[in-house]
Image (cartoon, rainbow, N blue to C red; front, side, top):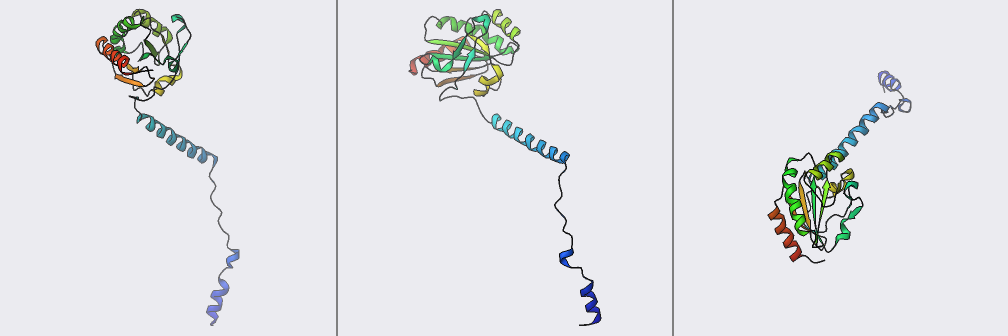
Length: 201
């Protein structure tokens, strides 16, 4: 070994004495940013899942309890307790133009069936002002039960994409027909007749 080699060996630091750099710590501000990004991704993911869900067109109708406007008598109506009847569920809002067009037809068909005891209409007021909703009901002389969709729980269960939308539930509790957008008296009457004939409690 030459003197040069010896010098090179002695000049190298002891590996045990080399400081090891510890992992970098994230600052509180950085942690907040990371958590915010994660939360945003979760929200976007849930919205994407909901967007891919569609209105039920068959199978058991999602159950719900509708709180009837006090001005219409108050009380509650639970869908699952109406088994044996054909139930027409109409989602509407006072600010909805097409809803105003179909409102007379809905009332007309309701009046034709209300005394039969075999058909029930339920109006679900979607994202609306109570005062405007009641004015709408009075304007069109609506007499079937109506109530607000508190917290949009009912519309969320039915995955509605807008208003108006109508669901006809058979006497067996299954969705018999989904009607997108407005409906006419003739069309609705025909669907109800089919539901009465083809479904059993």
